[in-house]
Image (cartoon, rainbow, N blue to C red; front, side, top):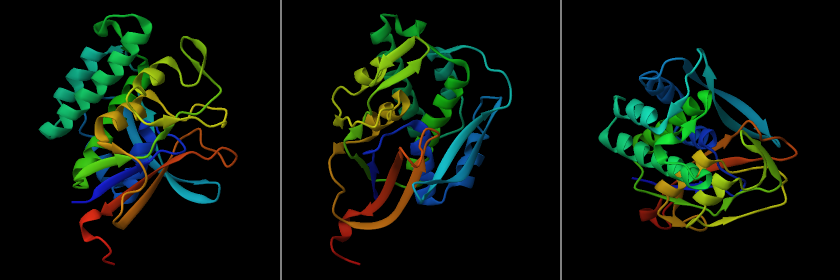
Length: 244
């Protein structure tokens, strides 16, 4: 049962987590099969290779194949509850979605039930959350640790206008997390990525001591050679000490 260490020093998002875990465990085909079981029509998940600053990374994309309705937390909850996954995956997915909803509700001054997830963004969110948890379960992870999270800097355009980074929901979710900022001039952490780290990580800090068994690289659509961002997922056997 390995330890999963998530290196978020250049940022984190839901799709970057999906891609890095799939890459570390060579589980792209597995996840595509599992996502096809999700009771959510009108999308498909695709993986591709992407070079970022000369480094080969994995990239996950949720492609919309049909129009999507406006969805609230109640709708996403029903989708997760009806999914044919383990009790642990469903429970953890609902907890992550609630973290997301509560952050949005708090910054916008809305009741939780009034918070809505924008069209395809709701599909992305459900896929990123359930997919990441399915991969953690499949990898047989004993515990999850993470680095401090790079929140980025500059400004970001969202549905409510142009706001400074971290955007309000990200700032809300960062409470209680180890985080920092650089002068990269872009948003590097998303609400979904922060919610997953906040729920999964039990400790923050440097790479734990142990035998590194696998490393996966997951980049996002905003990652470029000039501004490389990716999550690195390390699978580590801590119990083996200095054994090779």
